[in-house]
Length: 172
Image 1: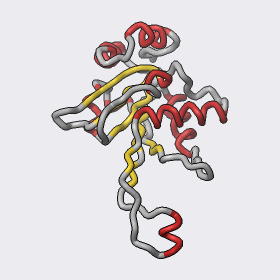
Image 2: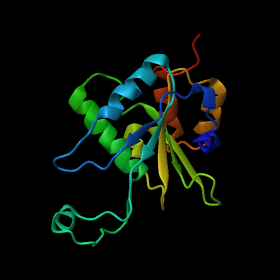
Image 3: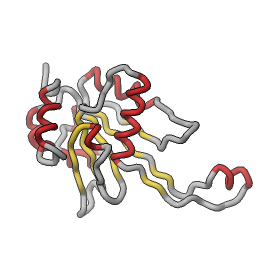
Image 4: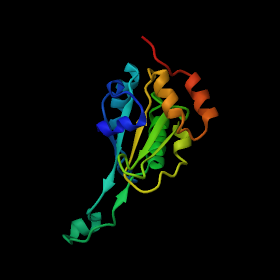
């Protein structure tokens, strides 16, 4: 978890870490939302750890007692951002939205590590390449030095700056 410091975000400005699971037609847990809400109210960043499915049987194989496993799946930053926006659309509590800033991180610590910053809407379209991925939702108290660092990884610096002006920045 401390490796996420590669984003240039100050680790002491992180709140509770949450997990995002793959949604299914019948299972769409939203418990992450309330923890993000608490972090947002405190102005803190939220690290979102993304789902991985490795060596898991299908429901049918599980029911029949067969040890046949589904191919591995790894959630992407784009999938996470999309699911987050779906939940906000359902809950309508204004915790975050399409213009909320976030940082996508892929393969943290590897030679081919990749960081991308942008709005949640922009991140629904980003291709971060192979797994593993994580996402950090920026807190409203993000310091100017943090902004300067992550801005270098922005999908679009103009939209990044516009979203920044809508309510980010260090406050006492």
